[in-house]
Length: 258
Image (cartoon, rainbow, N blue to C red):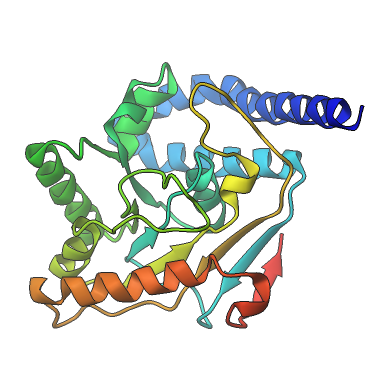
């Protein structure tokens, strides 16, 4: 009986979460379509997506711990390098990172009905199996950084098969981009997202669970070259992996609950 009640509770909460995710999209879609027609509307469209993320997360009722290990506002422009453990990673970053954030995502996102083409216009999609696609994505990202627009990149390249425990090897692109643009790197850890929405093939599962996002201190890249990428990747990987440790083992830092 206990297992049945737990199953029903999970299914009800999944339905609740899905409803409050889909409803804002449906209600705001006419404005999304209108703003997505020309680049002049893209910043406003991003504000809609940021509001969508904040509203949905609020309606889901999950507590979110936002940790900033460095005092002061987030730097900008910069390259946010985040771990990837769930499909809600983008939502949590849209909620917590202010301004007109750029995002680099896999090319299949642009194929999602209705929303996908808009995502592909406002942000950057990349086919990591194609050297040409990767090159174009880095050029677009560098142009955005030059215009003052920070970018978030999941340097693992895909959702880890063991999120919250192991980090996949980080790809070079985000680090080469930051060095070429001369902007800092901000490691971003999200160690609990997979507990809320695990990546289960062929099934949507949502489990009520608190969330956490950690903004590590910015790492300057001025004066670095491609030869420094391995050491830079190792440093960032160590910081992101440390976020997976039990609560008692984490470094203390200021945090706010929202």
